Image (cartoon, rainbow, N blue to C red):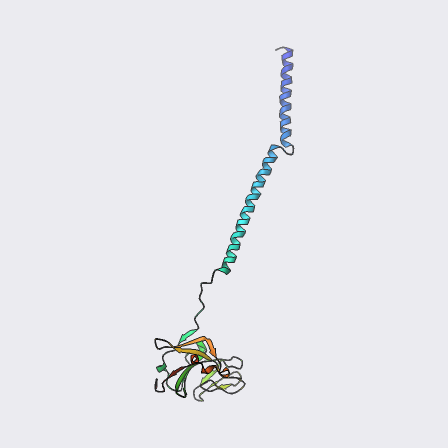
Length: 207
């Protein structure tokens, strides 16, 4: 090979090597293609993460608001109670079977024109203590502060300021006595005259 050819080959190699170094430097410069690709990839990742965060927040908000907007399917326990038939109650009788569990007494007492069956609250009208029925003395007595009440519920002694309250009571179509503890009647307000506060029966019924 002549000297001229070797010189041309050396020049070609130098040009090729310079081109490769220049390309490598170009790839390292800011704004190069590789960095643009990296920024594009990072931007897509950030967008995906943001979309996931927004979606999760939306699901959480729907769950929280839905909890308050959807009615509670659990029904409140019934405050109505069947307490037997009128014939189960003889004259001047006080039933104590519901005293502890339901905090009431069912009483049959005499009134003009016939007997009445009423449901009396077992809570003293003084401070809310549970009264007890004393069958020998035939009165209700409060063990806390000494208040006393007649079988009809009228306060007769102690600090109780008013009679015992009545619960609503009615005779169902099946002939059962039903007490509604969500409705109360106060004697001092004239509410004992409300027919919903008693069931009237014949004097000979249940005798």
